[in-house]
Image (cartoon, rainbow, N blue to C red; front, side):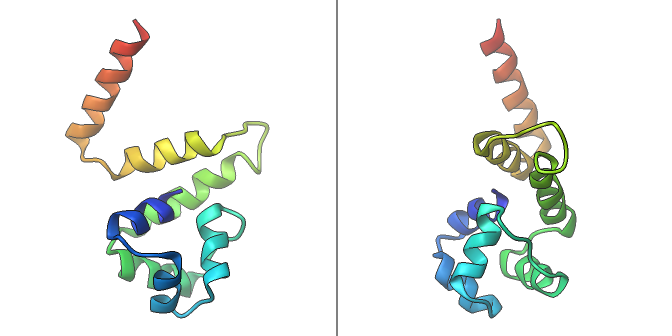
Length: 105
């Protein structure tokens, strides 16, 4: 999930994030695992803490729920892949797509 990637890139623990935004570690862990969603006020705190865009974080939450609310099921690797892909620059995304295309041949 995006939260885990953001946390790992920042080099902090779940407990450090939770303490910084004022929630319990287990609450943050549920968000990271996709088992619960943060409130709007907690989303704002996460945006400020990770210095990321609202669209990125909300898009991730919506994407994670896609498998829960439809017949389409996404596994954790697929969600993690898309989350990491979305953090790349457009140029790097094109490189990844080129690499995937080359692998498929």
